Image (cartoon, rainbow, N blue to C red; front, top):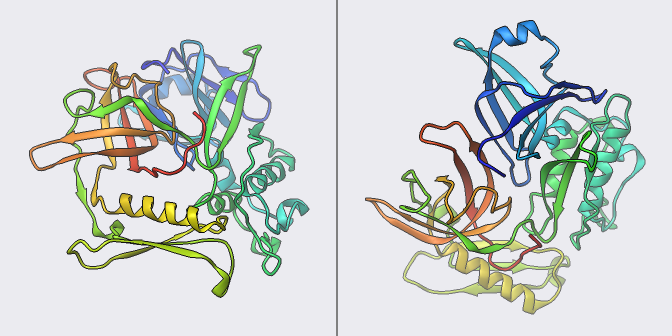
Amino acid sequence: MTPVPDRILTQHALTGQWLSHALPLGNLSYGPELNGPGSLSGTLSPRLLAQNPTLIDPGTTLIYAEAAGQIQWGGLIWHTEMEGSDLRLEAASWSSYLQKRRDLDGNYGGRGPYTNGDPCQVIRDIWAYAQSIPDGNLGVVVDSTTSSAKVGTPAEPHKSLFWEKPVLGDAVDDLVSGAATPDYTCTSEWNAAKTDVIRRIRLGWPRLGARRTDITFSSGVNIIDEPPVEMAADEYAQVVIAAGAGDGSAKPFEISAVRNGRLRLEHLLDLPEIKGRDILASRASAERARRQNMKSVDQITIRNTSAAPFGAWQVGDDVYTRVNNAWTSYVGWRRITGWVTEPHAPGGPRAVIDLKPADSYEYGGV
């Protein structure tokens, strides 16, 4: 990714017709998200839209940001609104579409129910069902990634009930919201002929991203703001119970605990796919070590430097982060859950990066 997009393109979602190859969008910001759609926003002259009303039609127009000949972000325009003398535009990437779709037939058109099903396959089935309905094919492809996570049991199969008309996006969110579930993010890239865009849901197991030792985020180097360093006891625990596969008294568990002069606080780590007590013990120990660090940095703003060049990181990566200000300091690994690039920000391009505590014990490929 280069800091400044070469152009903004728009396309009709159903016909594939290109509506604009160089939409003059100002105040641009865009970026991806972990287990979510990410976003794009910008402003446009109302006069341009009045002269070319087909350039933007919320709910059926696709929009892309391209830099150096590569698509950096793609999604659907959902909202436009007058803002002073400009028209503000807001878009979200591919998974946002499923928030506007429901299961009207049950079990995703008969693809379920699921007993010990792979949530990656269920996600693929949800997209297959959504795009099988007339005028519902967004052309999204879902990775063939498989996982060892399980949904549904013989006693309680995983079902989608047509009379409840469940939102498909909520169903996907449920499949990626647990402690031992796959990750996803939305991506876009040109096809080989550069005539259309490959719209993709990228799945990761056991997670997206990797621990990065080649880049850092540091105050005075590439962090340009003074992010708050939060102290929150609601996430703190010096006792972690890791519970594995099974039911009732047959369910294995391991406890990692220390006494450190603080009031005892406990956290349950549910790992329904794990049977080995050695693995449970390792996970419990790693989770306890993470939760004993009460300090938290959840968002930073950086410039493009050699310490972490724009485009060097991806959703899900763990990056060593150093924050120093007049109040306190923080040093530790933080996981990237999303960001927005602001190519026209005052002072030059910048990226606003959202962070969460890093899980030190499981990594997928880059």
